[in-house]
Amino acid sequence: MTPHAVEAVIAGLKAAGVSVVCYLPDSLFKELYPALDADPDIRTIRVTNEGEGAAICGGVFLSGKRAALVMENSGLRAAIEPLARMGMGAGIPVIMLMSYRGDLGENNWWAVPHGMTMEPLLEAMRIPYRVIDEAAKVKRAIEDAVTWSYAAYYHSAVALTGELVR
Figure 1 (cartoon, helix red, strand yellow):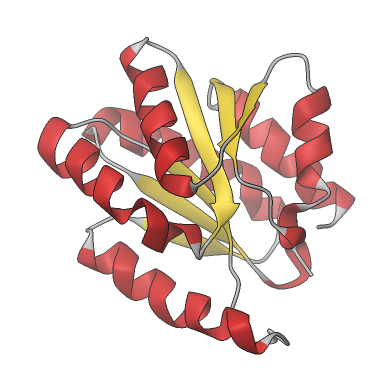
Figure 2 (tube, rainbow, N blue to C red; figure 1 turned 180 degrees about the horizontal axis):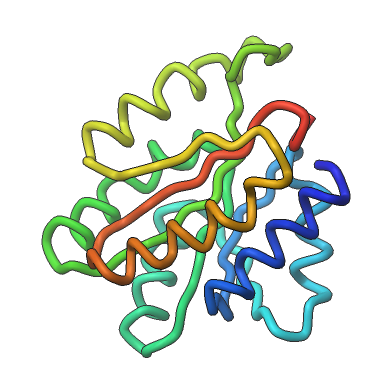
């Protein structure tokens, strides 16, 4: 991940009032995690799977704070059930920031299905999302996702691809 993109992500989270970030590390965001951990304004929580991260983010919402779940897009498949229960059943939003594995340019065979399933799953769950490939658009996309989710009481997602993460 480019240094400028790391800065833009952190700036977007802070501008949106996010104070807690749950994450399951992936290699495309490897430069982001140490920066999040080092930031004094953001509490990070490492999780064992994305469903656990979604649940923690939901609990943070119930406490009156703002959280985001940072993960590889493959984690969407692992988090579908908790997302469905919280979003559709209880109006508890989770904001997801994902690396877009499997997008055009992907060179790992095992990651191709991640790209093939991410957008159809987001659409099936009626989760609005943006795919971002320019650092200049990252901050605004995160701010918009958080603002929308907290107004709609539903999930949203931002997927970073291209030169931002490779």
